Image 1 (cartoon, helix red, strand yellow):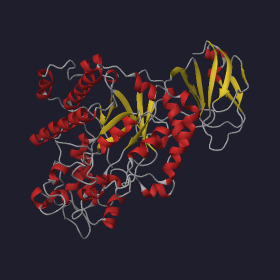
Image 2 (cartoon, rainbow, N blue to C red):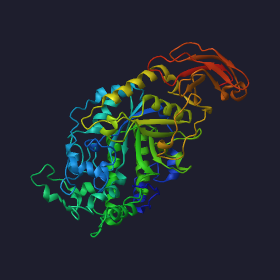
Image 3 (cartoon, rainbow, N blue to C red):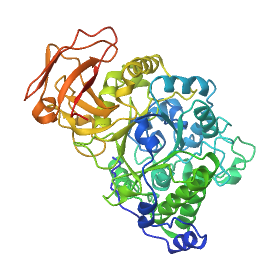
Amino acid sequence: MFTRRGFLGSSSAALLAAGAARGATIRPDWTSLAATWRIPDWFRDAKFGIWAHWGAQAVPEFGDWYGRLMYVQGDPFYQHHVQHYGHPSRTGFMEIENLWKAQHWEPQTLIGLYEKAGARYFTALACHHDNLDTFESSHHAWNTLRVGPKRDIVGTWEKVARDAGLRFGVSNHAAHSWHWWQTAYGYDAEGPMRGARYDAWRLRKEQGAGRWWEGLDPQELYNGPYYAPPDGLLSIKAMNAWHDARDGVWTEAAPPGPRGQAYVAKWLARQKELVAKYKPDLVYFDDYGLPLGQAGIEAAADYYERAIEWHGTPDVVLTGKQLSPYQRYGVVEDVERGFADTIRPHPWQTDTCIGSWFYDRPLAERHGYKSAKQVVQRLCDVVSKNGNLLLSVPLRADGTHDSDEEAILADLARWFAINGDGIYGTRPWRAFGEGPNVPPKGMQSEAEMTPYTAQDVRITAGGGGLHLFLLDWPDGEARIACLGRRAAGGVIERVTLNGGGAVAFVQDEETLRLTLPAPTAHAFVPGLRIEGRGLA
């Protein structure tokens, strides 16, 4: 239902003037960003990160975008909410946010698991579209020190991750909160509660007296009614059409009017504080280009300026989606749940999840997660094409993983312990590899991907040699055309199976032929070290 159509929003002369007035060395424009910033080596070397995409939407254990879709009559999320929490006119998402307690969260244990599972950087969700800041925010009262866990989630993650030697990142999705929440101002178009407006429409700050949210303004959380459906929509179809045409459009533009200008100013203040307080090595924006027009560019310039103050150079990473070729000189492109079909000239990142972005009990109960093998296949493909993989492993609301997730992390740990040298610190070779699998184009394309086979191979370069990954364990002889003498341009002298020993091989003009031993228990995606003359 929710269509994503990206475009950069209108510029703000006031924000541009403010950036120039402070005497910054990095101006808030794309030319200055591209001229000043360079991709840091730590990011290119790290290759693999784990993301705690964790917030109040984990409470219902029903998957992603619960906050928006629980207000869409007829949607499974709405039905789940009515069944478990009551009608959204009486029990809105703000009540769910306060039910998030994180009571069994042990961040030291989790970070230890993530580091062992191969992560070289860790990213924490700082604010999703539900508009709850998970950090100590002085610009937004709806934060986890006042609501739900009553803890600084980001600050705790940051200290533990850095103590473990990991690079630390944050993700900010709040630029879309204003239109994402407009369903909360609607009503049932059909049925016994027809016309009863949902909680965002009726709740005001003064109504919190004597309740858990005393002193908090629900309108600050839900952002106010920009596209509240008018009275008189008499069918679910009509209500859906209203939302699809207005707040269901994925836009980077600022909301309209003076209230919209205040929203943008507040977003920028929150983002600057997030960066200043926690000094992240990476900031992930869930936006096409940069968020909210000129405000996003101002945020980028501010972040790079602060990095210069911290480190002497802007050695940090900021991500955006669907960038133009020129924008990729100033920001890392993130391809959400997507692929590359060749080696990209600019380092990039794909982010994905083993399941739904927020914890999804029905998915877990049917054992529907991506396996560790599928994660590693994806990792090898991405790294061979000059990219990084950021992986979300969903946490339950209490801060724990289920047994299937723990098993996936353990499998990743075993694989990285044997094959990590072929991933970390490597660079693309002259060819990413070969194979019959042709990836689909664009973001959100994972569902269209066909399974990898043993004929799909990926190659990285590092340590004076090559690293070869067969994306499935071959049954019989493997033949690799791009490593024949003609295509490789060199002579292979030694092939070694990671965690094993020397592998017999034949390299002729057309192919490299080799036969691996049978896989041991828990083995998948074999990695091999290739040494020789004229290869690297």
